[in-house]
Length: 123
Image (cartoon, rainbow, N blue to C red):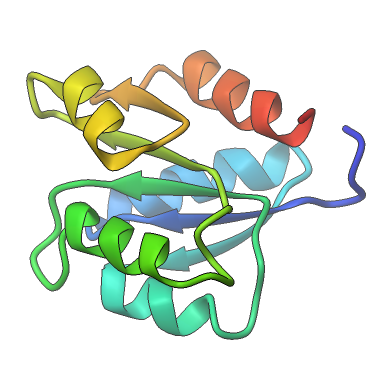
């Protein structure tokens, strides 16, 4: 990896999914910040600047869609690449509409998740 200990922001309202993905990323050598929703993620982004954001779309407090709109409206945050993941059927269409870098369908295959994260650290 070109960056020493690159930082990932993982946004998911499901504790088990979020904690499991965070653990996998940590084992791969990434630093990880987690948020339970979009509002918490925006607060975190005031203090850290991750190399990539992993974003669940369906969350109760602030959806991934609303988070992404807020991110794109902020000049300091808009260029952080986002990988969206969800169980929605048209996630590929949703990804394009959100201007996200990539997508993963739930349930997420671990190898696919790691490959998407690696791809964005090599850019």
